[in-house]
Image (cartoon, rainbow, N blue to C red):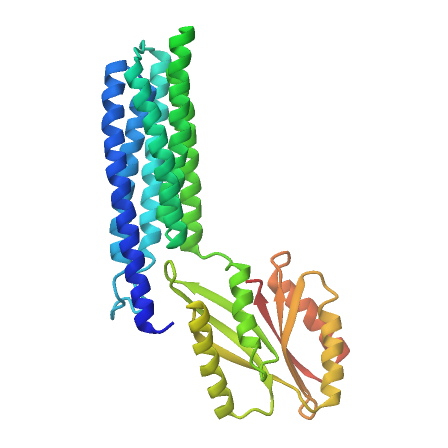
Length: 375
């Protein structure tokens, strides 16, 4: 995937997000208008709150468009890695709007429980509510599918919210039918249920977006694919310390350490790393910005015995997940290696334990142990 194709992909993604958002805006504004009219005619708090919810969805789509437009801006001197993370901020604003709509709905519904008002449904209002449910189901599925296709958290959130709206509107329709058949008014109580669902959706959206902003563990399938591509090269004995850096949807950078034979020249390592960077970018779109190197003993039998003993010692601990980057110089009496430590133990405590055990096994050696996080 060259730069021209990548730019085309970004442009197509932006257009798709904007187009989908405009469809969402149009549908939600129409639904909000119809429901607002019905809510006023029937004096139904549940229908009125449903209209407010549709209006908040339309506003969310506007914010999604703005986020997509700003996030697609090209890198510049001030932001050399681009503006992609703006989309996460737009998703956060969408979540805040949904949360506000939910809290407002809860307050209004509680007021109606305290001071009830008689609803007046008719056949036309019920038909319009039923049509609105069908529209929301179709819209929700479409927007969510587009969000997954183009890796847009804001669209996925909007689509999920629309599907929630369809379920909640169904509860409004059910309460209206119950009122007409049994003369039991559940309006305000249904409004409370709607509000709870909206608040729940808003909180979940906010937590998910916060995770994106803070940085979360990379998908196992993606990291495994990158490591596999790297280890296809015959010179590579292993790929470790793969850390992904996300700067917005589809904008991923990474760094990695390669374990290579200690006989390779700098020129050979340079050509190998450039080849690997090109392959990983072509196959995954991930840019390897940093490639470090671990040397591997190839001809020292004593070093191999030491490596096996150290491996056994380290992996005897449940919290020691992996050891790599091992190298021993039997003439200078030095050795070094990295250990991936789980979050079940304090890193400093783990290093102290390993250092003592390694020093006890090889008291004549100067030993350097580097802790790695379980990323």
